[in-house]
Amino acid sequence: MSKVTPDMLKSRIVFDANGIKAGTILKVIREKYEKISADFIEIEIEKRIKFGAREIVKVRTRDAELQPDGSIKVKYKKEELKIMAKEQELQRHPPHV
Image (cartoon, rainbow, N blue to C red; front, side, top):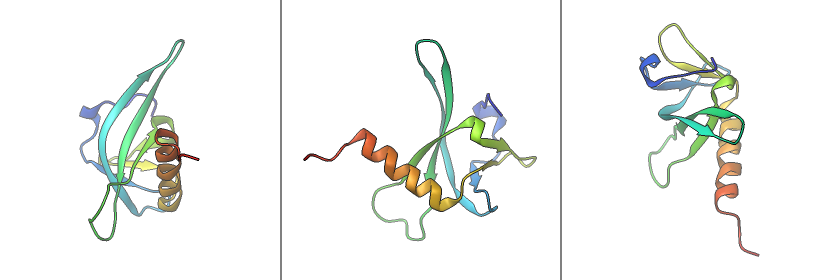
């Protein structure tokens, strides 16, 4: 699934590699670089208690596949998505030393 458009998504639910609900899709993003463009799916990771800041992770569309019901299944586990979200947050806002 290299090109995902919002109209392909019948459901905004995202499942992880184990088939467990991992979160919901916020948006589909296309980032353009000098020679290539990359498609990303921005996912809000589901929490048990909806309190505090949202955990948002960007996943390449090539790491996901569209299911027959219109939902998305990523090839990562929910724990791996949480680690990726933390790494991406640290890249955006590095700690001051």
